[in-house]
Length: 408
Image (cartoon, rainbow, N blue to C red; front, top):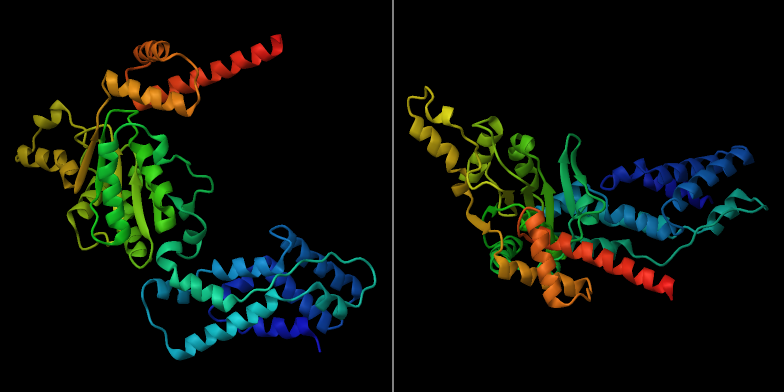
């Protein structure tokens, strides 16, 4: 009896988890199983064994954990269908049960199982195992799809749209709402809209308009971090990618998660194709967004389309109609939230909040005087200016403490 070969044979029958066979470690395992069954030379068997363990060790020392990750993160037709609410034929459900049983037995394979077949007396690197029930874990994952998702959406929560498709962001901005002082009323409107998206009760597309440095982009990122564990995901889109919106919306419509399509610093230089693509989606074309997607855009311009005097006096026979079409794009967002530059009182409130967070010991009067002077020198009052000021003071305070320690 060759346990390795028997398992490898069963793996060849996988249909739902077929893509797992393309994994490098699994390929090495099957090569090892074949080599031990076909009585290859001992050197070749040991070489393949080393390749298998090396691939495993690059991720983890536990075969159980490795197989579990493969199974739970596999993006196959079954989990995609379940996410879309599809019911499967009993023969597919039976195949799923059998495949999870096979993969559970693979996850339970011990180094002793391999050693007994290889029959080598020298040192062999070994892996670890833990008890695992892949059937229960997979059924739990299916039940939690609206919150945990599947595939890359289960492993990551922030993404960018690239020429290669939707790509995960391994280290997204960790900004939290608690770290953003001020603008509570403005943020509450966006939070309420985001909760409506998560709960599926109908969310608006949102335009965050206002002065530079007022925290528009930070607000969106902080909201993502706040609600990522409730099934919220974010995909950042560049202006020149707006033509891809219809196909992106169609693809996301069957996903059980909720998505923010984030367009940062949005503006147009004219009535170009990307303008028309966004306008069609906002107005509700035949390819309009589903209930699990909302567009959040930020802009420093109230009117998203830049215009010049030549356009007002051009040769368009219906110039007023054209101007109304381009200038009213912002009105097509269901919710517009304005972030205005703070007045002195609000600016200093933000400075005090951040100073407390950064544990500054500067007297309040001196803190406020220096903060005002810093704002004058750096383009005016804004949350960004306040943060830069406080961070600078924190560095100076730390350097002062270091000097005192040195002198003592």
